[in-house]
Image 1 (cartoon, rainbow, N blue to C red):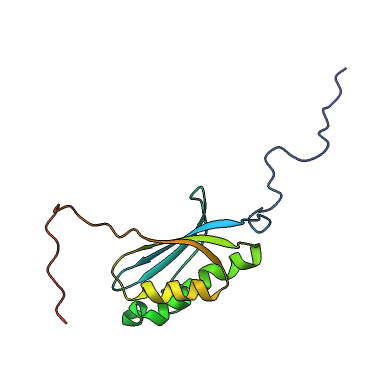
Image 2 (tube, rainbow, N blue to C red; image 1 turned 90 degrees about the vertical axis):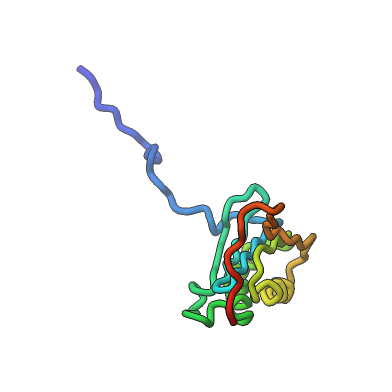
Length: 138
């Protein structure tokens, strides 16, 4: 006569909830990608895993207003707001692109009270590679 196997405790594949809010991240990397039409702010840990992100579109701006410095400032504030609560104190900033939101996003990051270890411009520069697109007509 065989006894039925009774499993006691947690199931093997059961999810007990997300640990995202419990993680303490003391140091991170803030990537600002500023184009003429949009600005995207992504915050990662030092290994490169994305913690939070925001863009001018997710911050409530549409159309030509997405390319403004004020929209970039709002996007940077929205991306960093949750991280200050999680305890991030130090950050590195990587800025990429030619857009108007570069300086505004950097000012918004500084205003949040985070210590910046360095600010680096990582805009890709061709060594005379492909022919660039035609210049914008204003």
